[in-house]
Length: 526
Image 1 (cartoon, rainbow, N blue to C red):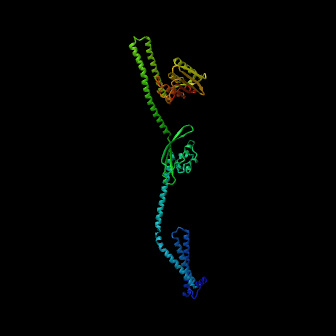
Image 2: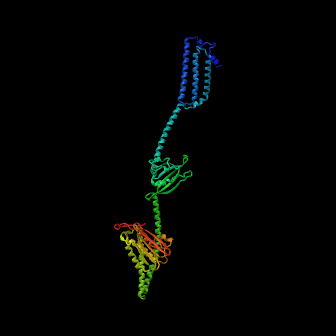
Image 3: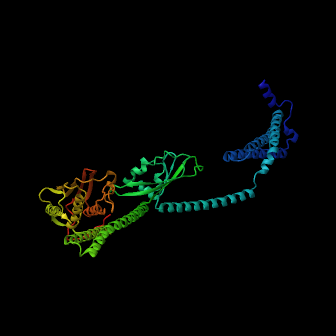
């Protein structure tokens, strides 16, 4: 069947060649041959160029239409080629089939081109493309300018952040670093802030003092509900000094990205903290001064009013009844006046001495001295001055030498022995123990007196303070405060053990290697 169709298409049948129509005139035949040959060749070349353009420019719009034009042009070229062939071979059925194919391709191409025409017309013209290109170039220039300005702004921002004295860093929700300033990078042992990005606390080599501090930044509390927080923390250095750091935690606007970030700022507020502490201490000291002043006025008004009353009473008795009083009573009144004046003088001496300690004007002059011998002489003086109690001195070893201030040491031991005698009952015993321990000397004064309530023992070294169980026993409350400050001059220690109704034991420990007495100095007493 196919062979019959093929033979029918290419069979000349009863047709005559097309050349007979031209009467085989050479000029006319040659004219048609050349014209059809050139047309066919041009059509084929145009088709090849179209295919080449589509292959090289895959971005051409409507490239399928170019292929349709190529097929149409090839078909047209083939019809012209067959015109040459039919000059000698009358295969008019095949030539007609090719023309029919050409007609179909041309009709389909024309039909496809009709709806495509508006789209082609909508394509920008050369002028429009040039204008768009110019606009794009301007946009590129503007974008480069903006990018350069942004880079400059970022550099300025980085310069500002790096020169801020605070530590600044920010983290993501996994507690990994997202960035920091130069000072923070230095603390973290890095050369530049960029090296910290993506690292955790454990990935960094911190300065020793900051190790534990930054290990606390684990970020367990980093979430979308995190609020701004502030706090002050302390870092203790190996030399026992410390610094105070104020930590601020601020959530960043996490709508910028899905990765939540928290900004931390850390500022050294040690000086501010010290200033606050000093201010607080000054306020407390001012309160103490006011309380001291109040107690001073109360005590002085009482302790001076009573002896002045005694002096006035005895003076009036002598004035009115001098001729009627016996010599013995006159001497008694004079003795009362003398003793009262001495007590008042002692009170004034204690107040002036306390004022020197408070004003840091006590001159400390330690000298090389024999401590045991000094204590023996002092105890003997007190034994002579009292016959109400027995005083026992227990010293081990027999000789203790050291650098101490004898004047200040006498203030310490005299006040302790005076208190022991004053608050001990008639016939009681007082024990003075003296011994050496390493490079210190220990003085211990023990009595069998009224004792001190436990709740009041913390106030013993407060000026003008007296325990509530002293009753009618006279005193100013200055003795132990003077002792405490005298012990501080020697950079020593003092402790008190007491039980009401049993007695009191006061222990003083002084170093034996105080500064040489050839270079006296003023001691600052806290």
